Length: 154
Image (cartoon, rainbow, N blue to C red):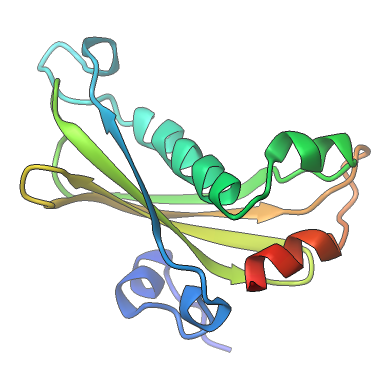
């Protein structure tokens, strides 16, 4: 099986992705604060990963899935892989749209895809993915909880 670079999967709209699961991309907005920029007024690169997390958390919350509930039930979703392609720099006071979707859900993993757009013209600034393993409190890999799988498919 040919490995697909995460950027290619995003641009092609992965065939096993959110369309087959019926999950529409979810959007939230955030404004770039001064603290998130460097001396040139450009967003420091690591903040995009934090915005990925914000998008992922809100997508799951919108599906009726709470990270806190999952963790209380003993299931965790650590990031096992991250990919981020920087296309255009975000700057202080830009309003950004964080678009998050589910690329795939497998037996013990889930991959989210992200696009960060500038609100004024919807220019794509960043795209990326995060791959997460489902693990228990001891860090052992476990299957996707049935309740989560149902919410993802409905």
